[in-house]
Length: 241
Length: 243
Image (cartoon, chains in turn yellow, blue):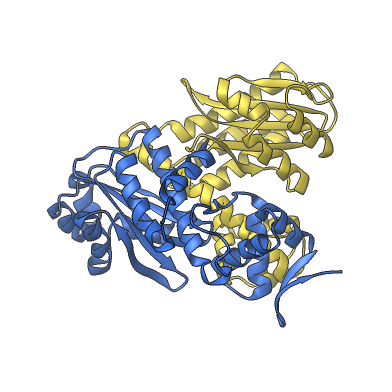
């Protein structure tokens, strides 16, 4: 098994391993986007999840950049993720110099963010679509069939994990978890603002510090965010990466 | 899409001569009309903790809230504490094991299913919307979507009421703003909370009031805060625009 294949296998074990009843949905989706970037040599990845109210919400992204945020947020209304979610089909190898007519606002935002190509892979299981994984590359490179298959497989593993629980009680638990994750995302944003102001750093830097602290101490990102908000963590404890 | 549904719910409630104080009752009444539930109640939370029942459609709904305080447990309590919805579609089966004290009282009052929805914006907990049924049965995915829209409307109402004092009565009922769920708005709330030395809930109120006073969409006000163009000062008290 060569290094690349071994890494791939490791990532799949990691994904499958995380999917037990009390896992933190936000952390899991964050990890998924980061692994996608690593394995597919993409420059950015974002995960949009259906919010159980008919729209898509950004739940995790591999990179924190203001323009990137805008790019994902407007996909609530227009863009490859929405189309992928609506149809359950993969939308791949989109050259952003040619997509202006199809998705005008999305294309403008993607170009402003410096991207050349994009792909949207549905998170789908037996007819139920719960969101979409969005990949971007800086250069307008095409991802080969093998890479896209890996990307879809990762999305599928995530979907299976989230939807595998079939009893009423467990579906109920999933709904509760998803709503909680959506609210956690808001909490993380609030914490970013507070920490940025408290430590006189940028919002992006604040996020990086919170994530590093979470990772180093084996804490959920949501937990760290709560600690920032209630002041139980000192800004000085959150030193840089 | 969802924001339209929330706006639709709010428009249906804030009609005619509705006073601000009528809004919670109207919301819970609308829940029982619009959702397959028997009754609903809304509880208020402040920075200091639970602050009582704001509205209830009937006896059992009021009982559902009171039980929280008398026995200190139940789906509503769990939901408020964790900030996570707690859906209990078959109270007779799952209740006694999970919440013995609450279930005894609730089943006695004819409650067979409870759906407790926290009303919150991230770390800002403003209350809870608790729905019950007199027969066991889960909400379908579509019904859950609608229930969540009612919860969003309830959150908008409570935030609106929270901002009453700071608002020199600018906005009339009928124009209850739905909070824009944008990352920048949440980040800006965090910054304002830090700058003004207030809770996130109060910061949210300040930010909305600023947007209203400056006649700008809240996302624009938020961006100004994030860019450092505007910040909140505690001395002198108020917003400072940086030159």
